[in-house]
Length: 87
Image (cartoon, rainbow, N blue to C red; front, side, top):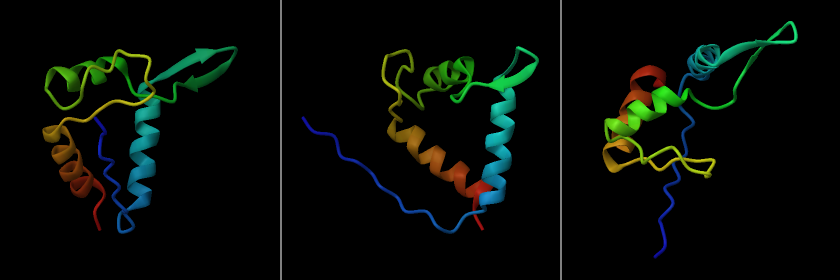
């Protein structure tokens, strides 16, 4: 069984808003180490678990570095992206 890959070219969106949200999400994962504030480069595990429980993504607890979005999750993700970052 092969999986189809959805490739969406998004060129018209507010990159400054995306940068702001990414920075805010990095803050969510901050911790202190050796007199520096660091942030994990992935998303908060509790948030990922909540998205899984809501049915938007498959179980994030795996060795894979990516997560599968459900049909409903992909649709909502696209709507939210347009809502927050669309021009």
